[in-house]
Image 1: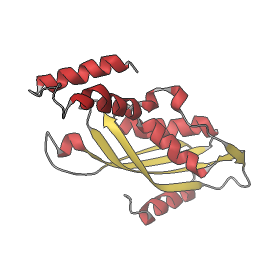
Image 2 (image 1 turned 135 degrees about the vertical axis):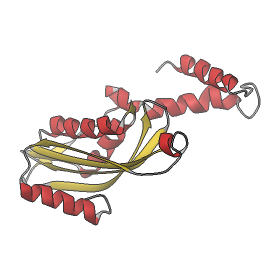
Image 3 (image 1 turned 60 degrees about the vertical axis):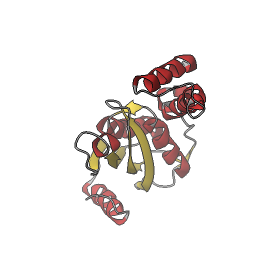
Image 4 (image 1 turned 90 degrees about the vertical axis):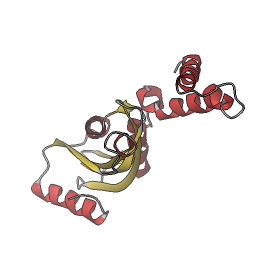
Length: 186
């Protein structure tokens, strides 16, 4: 990330809305706070930041389901956050991944400018590639601040889903039941 360019940009934005970037209250905002936040919130754009997906020999090829993963991302159209929950499942082939890595992978993928629909697909296809999984399900439920704070100015939840592979009907039902138990959509 070009830190100096980020500093100049934030300073210009503050000036554009009539603020004084030189004030004591805002000096650290453009010099350090916002550039640091942008560096963190765009880590998913840097391959070097991707978590190592440590795997273990699979004892079974039964579906692995993980629900309730928090997700925070930035809308590429408004640069405002959207946040919510990801539920996912995968059918391993020869190996399974450490469960904490699934959460880390979702966090890494979400740290970029994107749309919810794209992020849902990126998580599903990325996990399929990383884990050589036979099937991957991803469901994301998110609230967009670009809707809640501007535009329609109403808070709502958007649900997106992605499936990679050829799941069985029993796997689909198991995933739906796990999401329902976790308090997600149907």
